[in-house]
Image (cartoon, rainbow, N blue to C red; front, side):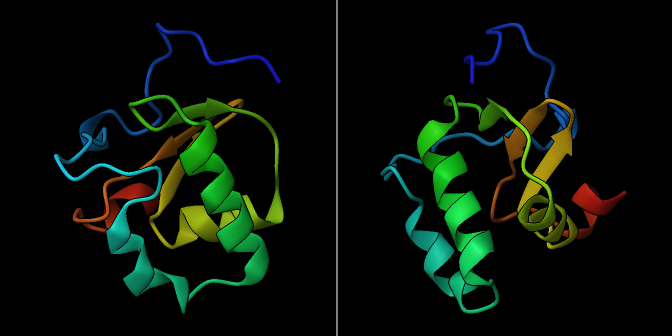
Length: 96
């Protein structure tokens, strides 16, 4: 996979994540959401967190787990771009 263009437009421009001061490779607030996810969904989410740029963007093509994560408001997707959404925002905004 090639890295996303630095000029890529976010999939959900009103929900671009900002990195918190306590930033780590994985946001510690994810712990509260992991029980809701399947192993495949966790794997994709961890992959995206590790591979995304600072704005949560990553290009690629993965299907079922992606659809589940979009449905749960954790990511937004517009082929070929993935966007990690902020954990403190409304989950329904990603589904619209």
